[in-house]
Every structure is written in C-alpha cells, then in structure tokens.
Image (cartoon, rainbow, N blue to C red; front, side, top):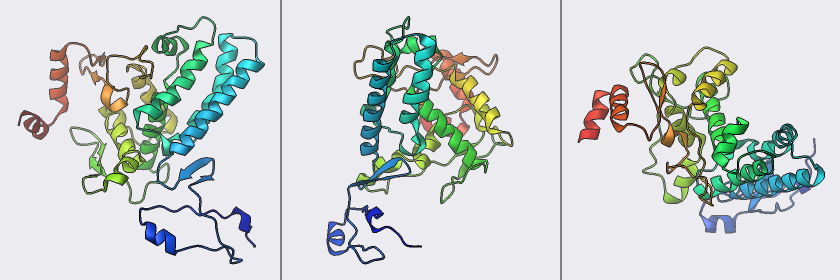
Length: 302
C-alpha cells in the first residue's frame, strides 16, 4: 500500500524550540512534511499547544452558521419544529466528541452556552430567562450535558464497557466502604505550570472530579446496562439546579459555578429529597457530617 504524501501533516508538542528547529520529518518518498499549528483528525482539531481552543472556535462558528441557516430557511418558530431542528442540526455540532475537548475556562463555557440561549430565544412562547427556558423545554444546559457525557464515559471505563485510560483510572475507595466508590485524583503539584491547565481539562482529572461529585448510590452502580445507569443519573440531574453563567450576567444564579462538583446538592438520607445548596445551613452541616469520614472531619476542624 502506498501512502499519499500530500496527506501527511506534522504537529509538534513541547517547549523545546531548539529540538524543533534542528529536526524534520519526511514522507516515505522523502518529501519534507510541512509543520502545522493545528491538525484536524476524526473531526477534532488538535493544536500544537495541547489545547482545544482552535477546535472550540471552529465549532462555535459552525454552530452559529447552522443556526443562522435554520432561521433564514424556516419561517415557523413553533416549539416542536424549532426544537427538532436544533437537536438534529445544531446541538450535534456543539457536542461531537465533547468528552475529549470539554472546556473548563469560564469564557469558553459561556461562548458555547450562548449559542443555545440565542436559539431558544427565537422559539415562540419561550421565556427570555435562560434558566426558565431550560425548564420550560425540559432541556439541560450544554455544560450540564457535557458533564453528563463525561460521567457516563468514566463509569463505562471503570466497568470495563469502554477502553480505559493508560495507565488505568484507579479506585480510591470501593463500593463496600462507607464513602462508596470513588476514583483517585491525580496530584498535579509536580506538573509544570504550562501543562497544568491541559491536564486539568483531561478525563483523568476533570472526569474523575465529576464522577466523585455524584451521589454514592450512583457511583456504586455496577454490573448493569448503560441505559440503566443513564436513567439513575438523569433522575439525580433533574433534581439539581442548572443555572449556567452567561457573559451578560442577566440569567446567572447565586452560585459562582454551574459545575456539578460545585453545585451538586446534598441528599437527605431520610426521605431521599434534595437539599438546595442555598437552603438551611444547619441541614447542610448535618448532611455533610454524615457523608464525611472521621479523618476528613478532623482535617476540616484542624
């Protein structure tokens, strides 16, 4: 089989500029392979700095263009028609392979969220308040959907239903222990500063953080189908507040973040209801003390 020289691309990672200057790569026919700042592979744009900012910028532009095409082509603003078009043509652009590139910076999260907000505002009879519109249309924010995908992917990895990372994700506590199943969070203290943001965005760090923030009864689900896990996860997510932060600030909630690990509510053990993070502080402290181990409580006191 003969390879096409034109389709070879060179993407270099690392900060050793001298090494990059003195080395080069050639194709099987000894033609010099051109070095590029970003390369698209299987629909995802990879950048030489290890981030996905170029990919996020590209998909935001594509989603905006698709939204504009829909609004120009279809005169109706009926809820059923508009939601069908949005879910079929716009949202897949914003979510393709999102487990890999999901952003953690507030600016990128807000730019992605505003595409959905802008489209929902065009639907007849829908509230102008983004949080109310999500409830009215029974939708998650894009941020919540991405974190849901990550939680599902991490669960599939530790259950052996999807290829695990290398090295594999490690369990910190097991199902039999009081805290339930949790995963070990990597220590990034020894990681160079220019790599910390890249690693914090990865499934090994961000994905583990999302999974560990889920309630014990969801983390402990094992030996079942993916659909059953999704059902249990959705039952929990429907009870949590979903108030994405926008650059306008008009629809922002009282929480500083909409990440699951920041707003994940405490479950009342007696009646299995959800306690809002902004409700009675005494109830929160009681629930928190039941969930933490003696060692953790001692650490908090000290």
